[in-house]
Length: 54
Image (tube, rainbow, N blue to C red; front, top):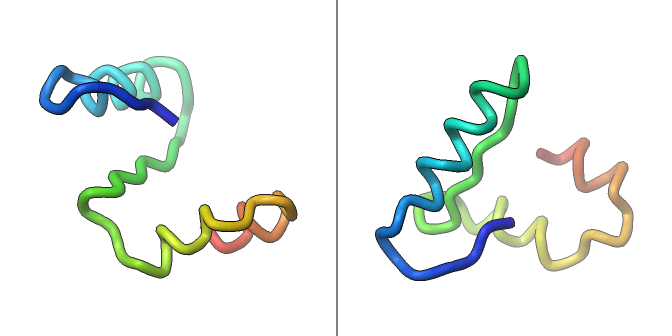
């Protein structure tokens, strides 16, 4: 998870890193996602379930 000031390139740098370092990746932009996805992050104790839902 990346936190920081708005409009400084956080999403851009994260996506560029993912493109260069991994065959596939999941990008979740909390400003543009559904409540169902956001709710998944309320309880991440069961990581197997968490990743299955993603």
